[in-house]
Length: 252
Image 1 (tube, one colour):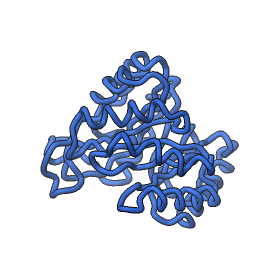
Image 2 (tube, rainbow, N blue to C red):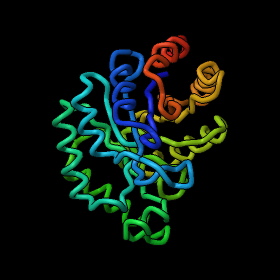
Image 3 (spheres, rainbow, N blue to C red):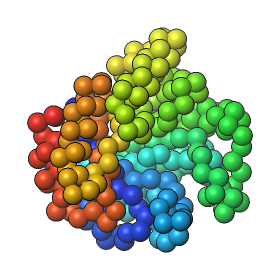
Image 4 (tube, rainbow, N blue to C red):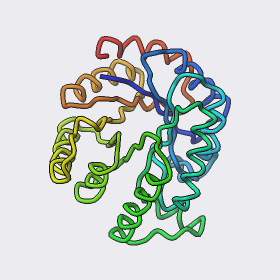
């Protein structure tokens, strides 16, 4: 099993996130680091600071030297696909080829309303998502991550295009069922599912957060996960990165 970290850019400072990513960059166990693509915090009644994803990635690409980096996941509705492709190419150049491009259809009605962005009905949204992914693929050759649990559309798109599929779920057996659906979509389009890294997010929180997260990582490994992305707590201390790596190392 391989490992990554994820930091939530809500209710925190740039310096705190930068320091955690720099600490992870120095630990070879962690292959990648991720943020999220939201314009408001998702905790605290949507009030308070929340740093913008892609601006951060450009800066974090400069602050790190080894670890791969990406946004989990970029909402397709927020940016024109061609503009997003240009942004991704720029960050990839800044990082020296370390970008992982994460894409999703988008879902947050409140954010769309606040910013005057159209959020189409579900079917149209996924039609646009498919078209956007295909357009971005035609413009880029970066590693492409698709995130989501939609069995009919999201997993079918992942089977066609993704190098990595990510799902957020609290149940390893539910995750295993979703992976089986992905395998079935791969069979339908004639693709080897082994070409797709299957990843899961695991929260590290609470007084026993590191040991509990390591236990969940073992369960997801047994369920077939290739990569565990460890979601660090708000305002995570860089000092927790090394103990977390130590707890996970036996699973690597």
